[in-house]
Image (cartoon, rainbow, N blue to C red; front, side):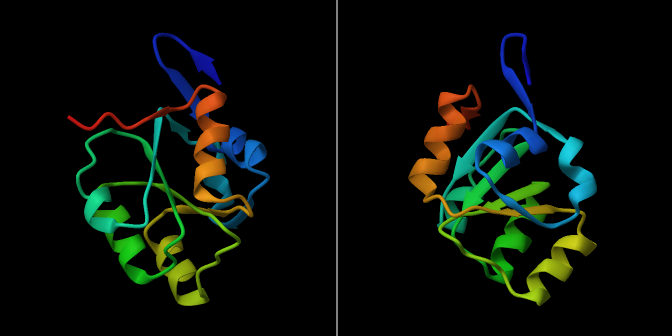
Length: 124
């Protein structure tokens, strides 16, 4: 991580902070992000405009992957010990998305990341 006006995190740092498991595409852990957004409502996610966003959610269905694909989100973190089935993981592999899973709740996950310098998405 480094800061120059805004913090830039590698996904591997987020994985460490959240004690998360990599579900697929671990080669993408070097990818960088500048902001995160937590929601279980994909309609709220569709309102995003921040580039290089990490999505934090408890939804493990196909709509999560499809929504992320529309917004070019390359990393999804599943919270509350939620794990998508193999069909979802395979689709994420195909779409070049890194999937992580953590035991933390969404609130705690967002708090950990925020307190370590990762900003949230600014909704205008």
